[in-house]
Amino acid sequence: MTASSEPLPVGATAPDFTLKDQNGEEYSLADFRGRKNVVVVFYPFAFSGICTGEFCEIRDNLGAFVGDDVQVLAVSCDHMFTQRAWADKEGYFFPLLSDYWPHGGVAQSFGVFHEQAGAAVRGTFLIDTEGIVRWSLVNGIGQARDFSGYHAALADLR
Image (tube, rainbow, N blue to C red):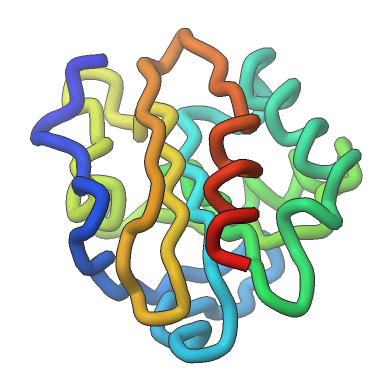
């Protein structure tokens, strides 16, 4: 994996952040506190094959990731305009947040920034309504993630 630090552990308080999505709208993790669980999905690069496959799974099963009690927030170091082009091409209607500047700052705070690649590794964090990490999965840049563990962990929170 080779992230710059250790990934945020289960039981830790997730660091708050505010980032803009592909449409320039700001999202803060704190906005969901007390209201919704949040799955934060870090990904390395828009338009890459593995990322496209993973995000098509989210798009095609959106009800499992977005609802009255859960919100997906996807985060990469790509620029907002790159994410917009990718979202438009693939039909992604969930927030793709830009951790472009300071470059990878949010990924670093979650322990999933890969210094040599200048990108996030594939970190997935389920954060409950109180801001606590309840489940996580961290894969290297070239390793696709399996969302089945996320679905089981979310069912436990419901």
